[in-house]
Image 1 (spheres, helix red, strand yellow):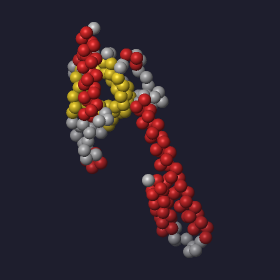
Image 2 (cartoon, one colour; image 1 turned 120 degrees about the vertical axis):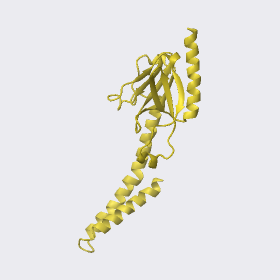
Image 3 (cartoon, rainbow, N blue to C red; image 1 turned 180 degrees about the horizontal axis):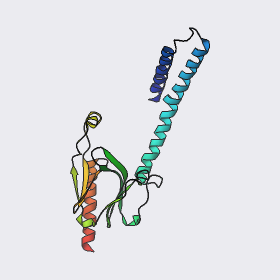
Image 4 (cartoon, helix red, strand yellow; image 1 turned 90 degrees about the vertical axis):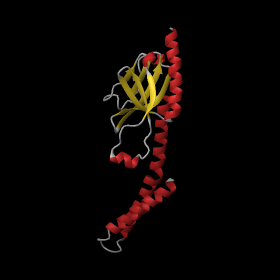
Length: 194
């Protein structure tokens, strides 16, 4: 796709520069040379180099999310006690979410926000594992802007333990809920045996 967007972006810049600079001397060779160089440079940078660099950066971010790499997430204390880990976004209010890692294990549920958000948002813990319930809920009410840009909002996972409730946005919510329910049953059965 950058092979299409690059020339189109460069052409748009070229036409806009020709239009807005026509107040100068007609036939100015330097002006046309600079405009032509600007077209080629911007087409190359914004059309070809930027999309490729952004694609590579996003690939590394997604790999870091799914692998729980240290440059994105802080490791919680006692991480070895948590058996399951997955990327998730904790929903805060109707239009805010904090990405992080959701840990599940015998100690309970622990959500650790990403490094950029860890200064503002503290980890969330639900314990004990035997008291945690899981269900799928509808998303909070949307603002007008959200209704325009997100016409079909994703349902959320809600974990509750006693009076504490936390909602998360996860990939493939139905499949994830089914798998996490199975993990919870296994962990709760292990806790009941011990």
